[in-house]
Amino acid sequence: MVKKYVLVSGGVISGIGKGIIASSTGLLLKTMGLKVTSIKIDPYLNIDAGTLSPLDHGEVFVLNDGGEVDLDLGNYERYLDVTLTRSNNITTGKIYRDVIERERKGDYLGKTVQVVPHITDAIQDWVERVATIPVDDSGEEPDVCIIELGGTVGDIESAPFVEAMRQFQFRVGHENFALIHVSLVPTIGSVGEQKTKPTQASIRDLRGLGLSPDLIACRCEKTGLDDGIQAKISMFCHVQPNQVLAVRDCSSVYHVPELLKDQGLIDFLWKRLNIEKTIRITEPLRIKGADMWIKWNQLTAAQERLHDTVTIVLVGKYTNLQDSYASVVKALEHASLNCRKKLIMKWVEASDLEPETRTVSPVKYHEAWHDLCSAQGILVPGGFGNRGVEGKIAAAKWAREQKIPYLGICLGLQIAVIEFARNICGMPDANSIELDENTSTPVVVYMPEISKTHLGGTMRLGARPTEFQPGTENSAIRKLYGGGLTVLERHRHRYEINPELIEKFEAEGLKFVGKDETGQRMEIVELADHPYFLGVQYHPEYLTRPLKPSAPFMGLILAAAGDLQSHLAAL
Image 1: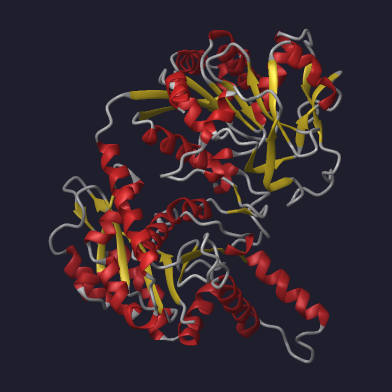
Image 2: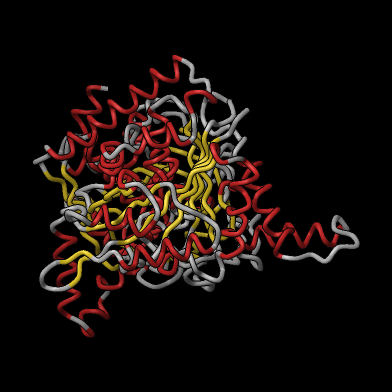
């Protein structure tokens, strides 16, 4: 079967938007009836993203198979509505590990193992293998593989991948390989003149490495490209004017696919890759793709017409880099869009809620508490370590006492239970083993099967079932999930609620409505006599989709807007 590959590279600066453009390109091709998969190449030496700090590299995204990967794979899954595997994220560490293991086994016996050809061959083999893995409910091989090359062209660490892609274009053939290069056209000075030199230099570097772009996606400010800029880039970068796309700043990233389509991206790739003559598109897939595009446009159009607002405060420890909570933000956006509400997010650094901040920085302290007290809903996401924990506990206490809708995810569930134990169950020293190894009242304990010496890839990871317990038919979260017996959600944690204390908590009104298949591990907790007080041990944000929002987030938005009970009654 003929496979088409679209490589997306970036120049000038990192974080330029390659992931959104790669996802948007895949979405547009899928709306034409094609089956699409995606690969993200990260040039760092880590085996995976699991041990990276969110402040250093953004959110760690978790897949069904337990792979801890770059946040861009979250974008791919959300835009394309596919289920990817850990193999869809290539890192330098993975490639070198595989090549060295093969060398030790003797696969290269008698040869000098080198970057070229052994590393570059391994990269190409990996791409071709992963491109055949089915990622949707059809169970069929994808037609198109979108490959995003992380980093910036010219980086030392990405050189082997650039060389591998140079060779790859000849391995698969000219009509099966297209390259989109994302560059920056900055606006300089008080007169607001757009400059093309950074893009010219970036394309020159790319061509010097043996790759010539088929499309140049120029990131620019809200006005788009000025008159003459498109022609200038065309002339100096060896492409036709229609191959220069203006990707301006949009009010929402969900408008980017429409922006690219209006500039002829689909038509160009259709001809460039000779899709009409080489790929057979079935009528059901064509109809499904067209329906997907209609719904996407309806969603983006509705977003522009929203007036009723809902204010959610996120209390976290990585708020200085909002990409640390990328999937949480997307889940809130998807839920608010489907509830026809305009989302207003406020970010509160958890440590700013703590008494010490009142002394050190009273302004920060009072601003943080003002934002928390004015919130319609409070969300405490996952995290690791001691910093900010007491601030999160204070936020959970405020939500419980003032009956403000609350959603705690992973650590957020554990925080809610610790707060409840301290203030309702008469356990003033209640704490987590993670936060205080010597606590006299361990409410949260280490899971016995988890390694205490190796941190990479050793957590409880991936999609696992949660079973609703008998007598929970009236549970709000169970109704939001559709009333079934089981839900499948993705996990990433080392610690769990101490099962020996469950009876005490439930006697005081904290109900563990969902448990794992053994009945020993707590997964979902609800508080009785509260508009919406929910904690989940898993990460529901990993499975949210623009057209299929996550149930716990839907509940938070509905409760914050005062619509939860009417929604549940309608169900």
